[in-house]
Image (cartoon, rainbow, N blue to C red):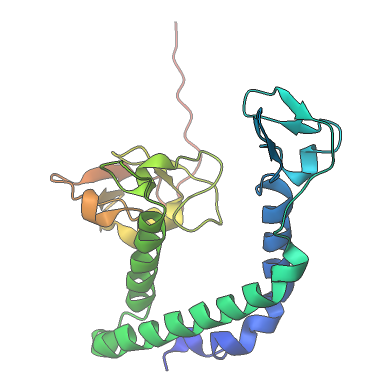
Length: 218
C-alpha cells in the first residue's frame, strides 16, 4: 500500500465518521424530503423544517389543507440500511482504487490513482442525476457559488467554460500547470462532455506572492 493509505483501510476508519453520516441523513430528511400529503387540490411540497406553521401547501404556496407533516420515509428507520449501503459503497471504491493504484505504482505519483478514481465517481454521480428528456447530463443542471461541486468541501473560486466553479485545489488537481497558469482540458463534473480545445486557462496568484494593489494617480 502507498503512503496515503498508511492510516489504515477506509473501512477501519468508518466509525470516526459515523456521526457525520447520521447528520447528513437527518439533514436530508428534515430539509429536503417533502411531505407526502396529497388531495384533489394537489400535493404538499413543504419539508419537515418549514411545515408546522404553514400546513400543507403546493408549489405555488397555496394551502391545500391544515395538518402535520406526513412521510413514510424517515431517518430513524432508514439509518441502519443507510450505514450498510455506505459501507458497501466504500468497500467497492477501495477495491477499485487498489486496482487503479496497482497500474500506476511504477509512475511514482501516489495522488494520481485517487484523482482518477474521484473523477470517475463524480462523473457517474452527476450522470445518475440525469433528467429525463434532457440531451445533456445531470451536471449541467447543478450550479453553486457557495460550494465546489467537485470536492463538496471548499468554496468555489474559479469559473470554467461550462459555467461550473471549482475551488483552487480541484483546479490544481485536474488542471495542467503552465507556470502560474493552469489549463483545464475538461470539467471534472462531466469530463466526457467537456473536452476543450484549446484548454480553458486559469491564472492563479503565485503561492508566496504578496498582496497586489493597483493605484492610479490623477
